[in-house]
Length: 134
Image (cartoon, rainbow, N blue to C red; front, side, top):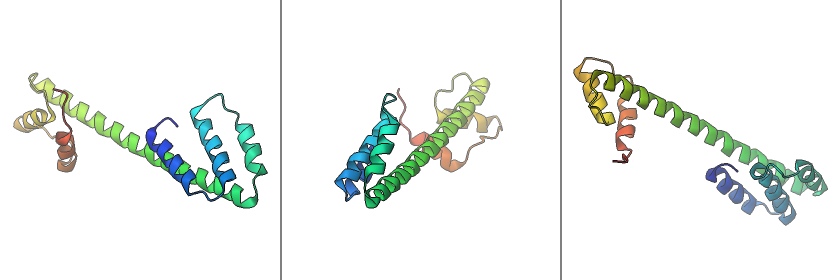
């Protein structure tokens, strides 16, 4: 997996599987996400070799893992959009006052110049809670 959340979710899902064979196959399928050299055809063959209960467990686990990955992508897109909004806010404020160094500074400068901040109070509180690297 390309992110720790998905890997942890895969391990949690595998731990709940009652069939040891299904767990082994699921972990092999999950490894395909990690290794571009892995053979997906072998994972399909191994899944088909399981009894119907094991096959159902592998499929259910993959569906659950897909949902975790979808949620992680959605969260990443939200963080990216939030970051873009903060950057735009900072750039607008710096154009008015080059001494702006923080989001708080940017908000004060924009408000002092009668400019709309363009972000909700809640979003600004979140951004102000993030520690800086200073």
